Image (tube, rainbow, N blue to C red; front, side):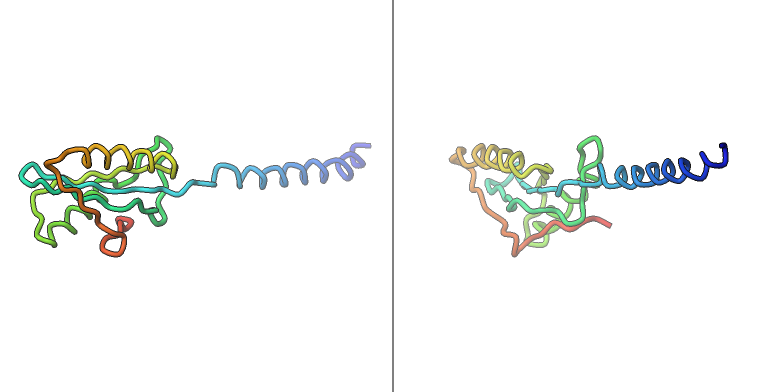
Length: 135
């Protein structure tokens, strides 16, 4: 009787365990893309630069919701502007894995600067500048 149990039931139990372990592998690996835009301002200049919203390549937020190496993305924008002769600027990056959330943040930031009469708000197109994943 014991041998019959092993012969009939054990393979079925083993198959169920094996198949259920594969179904768990697919869950939780679906990570959303990350969207970002940058803003650069200066205390000595009335021009505020901003990038278009971009989808970051091969980047995912940490489990705490932070962008890995986010300071490197700000540094990329700062270096881009320095190469154009715009030194001494403070660069910020805004990010989200929700397109709706990043659009709301973008609208809020751009509205804040556009309402100031003393500020010139200039767009940096995706053709001119793209964030790249830091090494």
